[in-house]
Length: 56
Image 1 (spheres, rainbow, N blue to C red):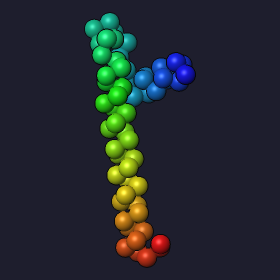
Image 2 (image 1 turned 135 degrees about the horizontal axis):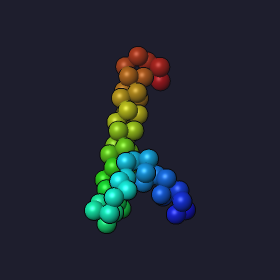
Image 3 (image 1 turned 90 degrees about the vertical axis):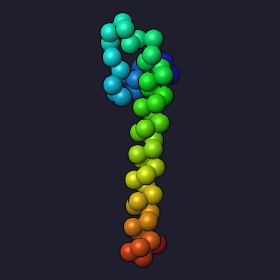
Image 4 (image 1 turned 180 degrees about the vertical axis):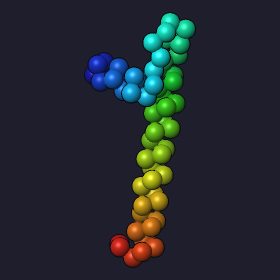
């Protein structure tokens, strides 16, 4: 699980310098929320357009 977290951390743009290392976990929480917000927004837009076009 730790390796998966590390991959997610670097995929979201973690820095490798020592100045920002103490803040990596807080930054990954904010960036994960931001990614999740975008995914939810896109899904809602797709659902709304599907209803508008009477696909469902």
